Length: 349
Image 1 (spheres, rainbow, N blue to C red):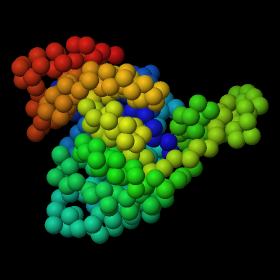
Image 2 (cartoon, rainbow, N blue to C red):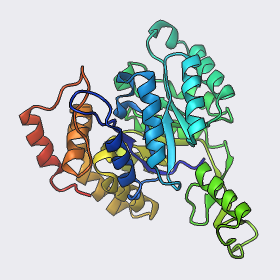
Image 3 (spheres, rainbow, N blue to C red):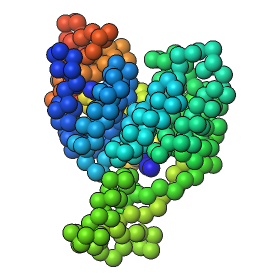
Image 4 (cartoon, rainbow, N blue to C red):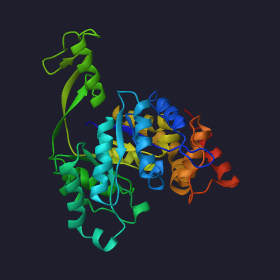
């Protein structure tokens, strides 16, 4: 699965009484799917997943998938502390049609988790049994555990572990993981314009071809192109894919080999984040740096310092539904709201 580009880890909307607001979740997903993002992450940290019940997580995964466009890569956050429960949620996500699973590092039993063999065993066990390809999720600011680059490099050899979301903010760690996994090459299906081909796209194309509902695609542009129904695909070699989670460090991370990012800031400003990636892809370093500088302060203050309440308020400012958070999180103070409004004033969609 190609994971290049920008992915918002979408929030979970709530009614004032704290119940999940599924209609607003669906509305947000529909709007993100009209933006230039590559896909969405559902039930990550920004989605307050650890504050939801198991049934609420499952219902949120279902609602988001029902509203998603077939051409957007859908990633399910399925990390639970135990391998057993992680697999149960991953299998459910697969049954809904998700393309990949993002699994955060277990972290509660620090004395055990700090031993490399425990983390290696956890991820290899999940990867061996998972119906979906896995993305390691490292978020030491929240978990208190920073998975070592050497452990990630070993895990990258597993054929079902295809990527990492590295949220530590360390450019040096990104550079090391890219350098020491460069030998890994995997074949993925992409469109003729080098965008990801999702399972839902393939299923729709195969169904159309077999039923005759859609015209068969015209002659492929080369022998490397495969036509299924109205969909033309080709093969692309990709390595172990390193994505980052710090919007304020997106451009320098791309410069050392990251292929994209899963950014909480993209929940409020997906286009602003995409513009940095697009300029970098076009090898326009000057524009990429300018676009990076434009969002840097807001990304630090609104996301890193104000956390989920800040992200949700910034979403409200930009026309998405952010809404309330769940306890123990608290809404922003009036002073924090004023700061967020100032920082987001020139970052609109």
